Structure formats: C-alpha cells, structure tokens
Length: 124
Image (cartoon, helix red, strand yellow):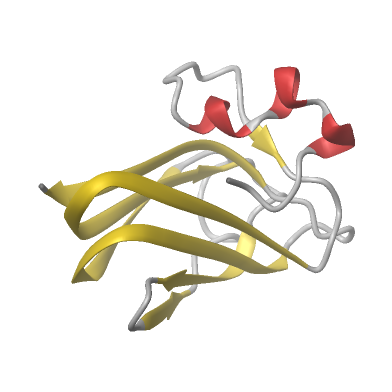
C-alpha cells in the first residue's frame, strides 16, 4: 500500500511500478507533507538492506523505517548524487512480516515523492 498516487492515476503512477524493473515507470505520490509505502510479506523475513531509486528533486530528506517493535531513520543523499541514482542503505537486521517506509521532508515544494525502484534485501 502507498499513501497516495498522483491524480489517482494508478495505471500510470501506481505502486506496482516500484517493482516492475522498468526504468521508465515509477510510483509518483500526490502532494502532501508525509508519504509512505507499506509492504506486507507472505511470510516472516529478515531485512538487512534497502535499495531506493528516487527521481532527483522528488526525494525525501528523511526516511523512517518502521516495523511493529522498532523504528530507524536515515537521511538519503538527496543533493549530492546524480539524478535517479540507486541508493543502498544498510539497516539493522529486522525480522518482520510487515514494513512501513515513511518519506518525510520532501525535496519537492509540494511534498511529492517519486520512486523508480524499491528493493528489500535479506533472508527468508
């Protein structure tokens, strides 16, 4: 699930585009102060790394990773990397079946977030 989709156009900007491996498609949120993505896994997994590819100018200055027991925040290098660079984040290993990533303090004036790729790495 996602917080919003630009103009509710799920065909062009829906959440599925973060996982389709097509470099021309993306999830584009609508405007707002805080955007998020929730992932439900079919079984318990151990997460150790996240890969996120933002559109330059539509990224987040602060990301928060939440599961039922703990929370972790990190700061993507929004201004110091090429547009649409893939960012790899090591996270404290978490065993979970549901994960929420919150994108706060968008670099876009209207609060929009654009994600071309979201990958969650770890073990089953």
